[in-house]
Every structure is written in C-alpha cells, then in structure tokens.
Image (cartoon, rainbow, N blue to C red; front, side):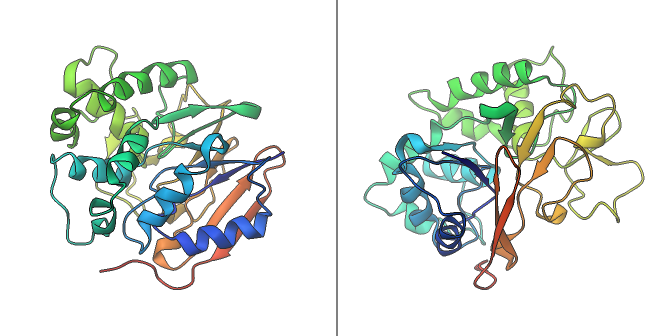
Length: 274
C-alpha cells in the first residue's frame, strides 16, 4: 500500500492516466493525494473530476484557485473568463453532484507519514494546528446551503497579511489567499500577488514563502502545487513542490510518500486552450 501525491492536473486527463500507469497505481490498495487545480486551461476537466470523485476513499483533494473559480462560476458569483475550459462541466448532467463533491474538499490536509498538503503551501506564520483550525472556518462557508454570497466576496487581494484579529470576509479571504494563491511574500509574511516568475529573477524585496524567517512550520513536510515556475524544485528541507506545468506542455509529476521517489510523464503537447 502506497500514497502518491500528484501535482496540478488542470484538465490533463490523458497525462493523469499515463502517470498512474507509470507508478503502477492499484486502486484497491494505494491512495492518491492531489494538490488542487484539478480543472481549467486543459482540455478534459470534466473527465478529471469524474475520475477522481469515483476513486471513493482512495483519494485526498485540496482545493486550488482554479477549483474555487469553477465553484464561483457554478453558483453564479463569477463570470467565465476568456481562457477558461469549464463549459463541459457546467453543461454536464452530473454537474450538481460534481460541484457538491468539489465544495466538500478542504483547503488543507494533515495526513499520514508526517506530511501535510495545500494548494499553494503553508503560510509562514501558521503552525499545522493553526492551518487545521483555519481551513475549517472556510469549509463551513463552502458547505453552507447557499454559498453564492461567500463566493461573491471571496476574490480580492486585501487584506494581504494575516492577523489573528481579522474577522468576517476579510479573515476568510485572507485564509483562502494564503492557502491557494501564495507564492512570494515580503519578509514579514505579507503576500505579493504581482510577481509570478522564477526565483532567479525575483525583485529584491520578495522571498518565496518557504524562505520567510522565522517560519512556524519549518519542521513539517509540506506538499504543494500552484507554482509551475519552480518546476518541482525548492532547495529547502521539508518543502515539496509538485506542479511541473503539465498544462503548459511540460510534465505531470507524482511523489511517493515515505521514500519521496518522484515519477513524471511528459505532456502530450501544450494542453492550454487559448
């Protein structure tokens, strides 16, 4: 029995199937963890959702920013954007069932073998206990009978720094942004939403979230996706980026927990639909 964590799929269903063949996935024994962004930009988001949902108890999913965008569109709180590839989901006969399943996924998972996982990483000032507590605050809103109000107010860049004194939608929005949009921070842990490039070319006043000091979760093993520019590499102990840009024509990557062996398959082509 093995656990494999898999980076951002973004609708690249055929590559996911190739990767599962590469790792020899046994659905009767093995478990798959997914770093979020199951959907969008790639061509087969509907197939990805159906497949993962049907894995039953053999999977863990944390929500990514594209997954939240899909939910917001479905609940009428946001418009489709020009590059979205979500129309087949929104027109599917099982869309309600799929959206109910998706919105029941957490933003953070604290699991086996000492590993934790969220889409973008773990805010430098949060312990694992903090993250477990804060994800439940958002989950309560996602599972409300009418989540449209939450989605209408969820998107935005403010506030850009965590404080325990935040409340209301400012608090919830800040939690969501750290879990799903974080890449670079200022030295005090304040989020930067503008620069999305490589570490080598970053502005001097920014640091990747995992280099903010002190970092409350430095001793935790953190699996995340979201940041394709890292190409799966971060020279920091206990930090495991797994988004290797499959939707951009690069690779889809899995890591086996325990021995941390990585497996990758090359994208069939650039999957992004303009």
